[in-house]
Length: 481
Image 1 (cartoon, helix red, strand yellow):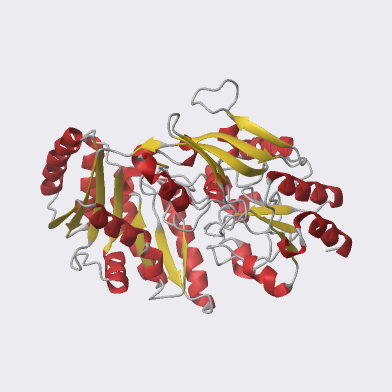
Image 2 (image 1 turned 135 degrees about the vertical axis):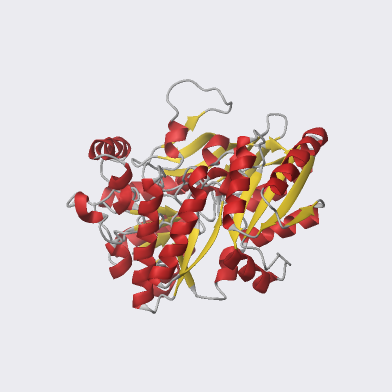
């Protein structure tokens, strides 16, 4: 990086917020998808939209690629600077600017951690519904970039369902607002287009989010089953009944044991599968749904039921669910996963397929996922220093992905495409569809500098790029469009 560029940025942002030392840059070389690593040439930490816009303008002037980043909890390599250039860390933009309880909205900067917002909303009897498992660390900007979901998305929806308007630094350096502060706005939904675009169309700096009143009553059920088939049947029956649980999560036997050993939560060790089911709403509605739920669980040979009634009991159950990845770390130091969404009727066959993949490739897989949405999360554990284990994890993961797509699944439910799934895009989308997506990117970012090399596969050899695991993961080299 030219000293003149560094000095220009330091004059605007301050010397402390422009990083170029190797040991500083190394902190930003990967996100939670540790199979892919790429260090930026420079890291900047703007504090305002105007500072972020200035950085983008400098990048345009010198034709430098740039990538926005939040807390680095992403799981698809979406925040990695694959062409080097400038990494724009949004963590200093962490203010909750306004809470409007009458209109049930909040205006926030994108460096606000998801859990911070919900803590601030408690006195108002409101909450922000999207709650990824990394809720205690992930930022709203990252949630917007990946269209994050979470435990409660079965009832309340994913991030895009809770975004009203966005302040965006466009790739030409202009600051603009898109969307509207009501649910009804005219014209194309540009805010909807921006959510889930992984920073490839611009950098979101502020958001007006929709808030939800806290329900009158909440109950969480832990239901243990002796077989995966019984648990899967219960999931289908719950959805078929017309009941709308606010959460419906699945944990397999390995995950239950891992969580117990790590956190001593007392989950039933003998169970082959555990469902965590949350009901919320008015007292009368919850009471009605509880009767129906108990009947369904008993019809599917539930072996044990535990109820979390108090806030502390419910929080303990959900904390255990959200800490599963940490619990896996007691077995092997890293994990790799796909987050395909499949029809709920295919849960049991796909789980059987995952089990067969684990045995054939001699890999350990822990399953914990949003069963109510059919959003799988097979966590393939591995040691990064064991090249054979890494290759088996990648090849096994690809086989699982193919199986999910074969039953009508999609590539990603909430983790994004990023680098990790880019080469699989032709499996789900036609060449024509991919070209139209590229044209949208080109309209916003004709120079191709805003988070390049994400989402789309390499143009050459697209018919073969998904034949083997992503080469960026095997070699550590960047992927180029």
